[in-house]
Length: 147
Image (cartoon, rainbow, N blue to C red; front, side, top):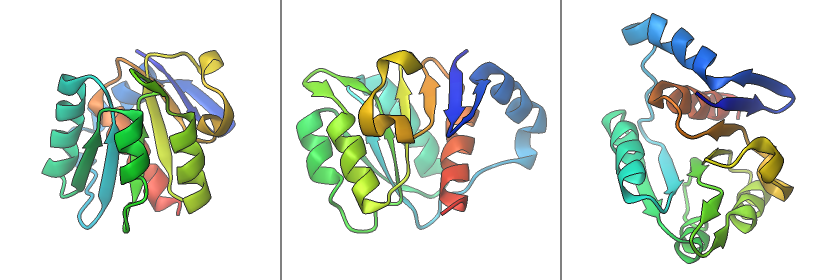
């Protein structure tokens, strides 16, 4: 269960995930031709997220540190990013700022609560961990459709 913030609209992610689960196979986001950056220092979480996006056709890059993320955020063709806010070598605020400068949508997927996220990271939806994969997929899909 987590808190989902989309701009000025907020809801509990558990409610959104129940909705996504009820729709089941009717809603299956596809990310064919999209490039997704995952910034996550927990290896198993990164692997799970990457696998779900790859199953749906995305090209996925994974960064486990702030240094790696800052390199990968400059990639041509980057469509969206999913960022853990608290990394071992710092928080992802500088990555959020660079994504915002480049016009690339992002989601904060973190154990941090909304009150703990600051700066440019406030410009992306916040999905607290743990969250259902359907919520994360639907949120990224919505960001890409709104571009």
